[in-house]
Length: 371
Image (tube, rainbow, N blue to C red; front, side, top):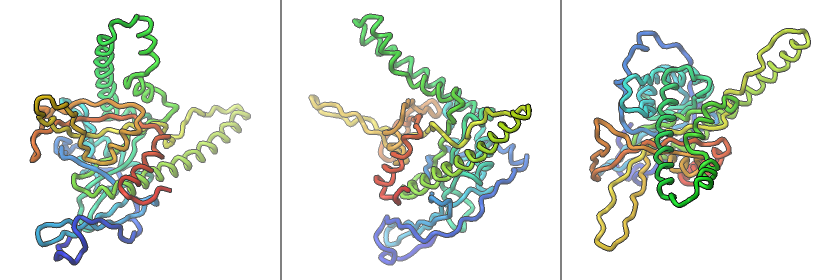
């Protein structure tokens, strides 16, 4: 970071891409048991967000923000995940804690998974010369890592909350349609799967890999980083799926040869990177409705997303549900703009929708064109 006189670095709040450089090799190392014992409660509850480049290489972005008579020139680097990033990643993963009363949520276990697969997928936002990271993006196979305690907690929380939302919506709809015959109401309800049903199907059908999209970054990090980070992630997943498919073909050929010889081979493996669906968890805020004069229609307040791409994901989600975040028995958070309610948004996004999401992400944020 450097301070440069106003007028020397162009207009305020401008962001431009600089030349890319080769990324440092992603490392995959095992952390010491001592680090494993670090408490996740130290993880910040700060708002976060994310970004990356299609070839997995490191990319730099310069952001100039006007401050009085000076401008701050910050060079953000999108690079591969490295071992020292563990603590920063762990702190970012705290946003996945859906049950605020659960003190056993272990973000370290998820950070271990992100690091273990960092040679295959995942990127972070960093500043050259700093040990801190300012964002992370990756994807975790929830079927493969179902035995990880934190993954089990996330699944349990999603199913519990989805069931609660489905129950409340079904009870309200049944009361509003009390004049409808029981046969017609039951057939209509069965024809439209509830969010709980769709999430349960995604969790239980292990033949269709289910990914957890990890996408978080610090507040005020330029949104222009989001398109290249998503391009990098989904390109990495594509190449990983191709490699896994080739390995499965080799294994299948060996199995056929072994079967001819009478040997037993396991042919039940699936391509762990060929995700059919993704679960996306994020947060947003809602301001209280403005007071209207008598006779004026009430206008529902619009959600305010901390990451602009969350709105795009929501447009293309197969299903979703939301619920208020309660911190210290309070749903309302006070800011410089007044009171705001914080909500969690849990979405199920299909593989087919990802292409459209990437297209809209580039268009809405003027990012680089998708491949």
